[in-house]
Length: 161
Image (cartoon, rainbow, N blue to C red; front, top):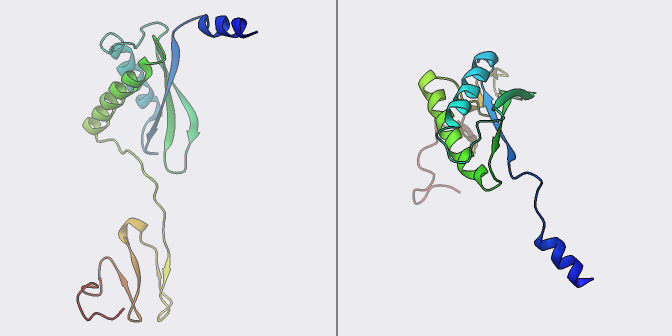
């Protein structure tokens, strides 16, 4: 029994050494998905001759999967690499190249945003500014404060705690 297991483990090989590589991408809802798909595919195809391990055939392609995210359009770049280990270098290089394209185009790289509605106890007025507008807030010495109007130095000696 031991000899059989040893031979099976030693002789184990995949029928083919190439491996599919899936790279998720997110773009803002104001982006044209057809244009993004074309540029990402073109970048992957041209990079196949330049990045070690990225295969020319079968050609890389992009799918609008998983689709509509909470804050972004989510796509997947699908390409083939020569071996499992090549995945790391290929992802590294392709992501840098795609990021440069996003920067050059001025494309929004989305990040999660939430709207916070603050209701003042004194006048009942709703404040519907985006959360990025209010970095932090709370009560200090019974008075509300936000990042825009902090209550002075909270760490100075003698400050109430």
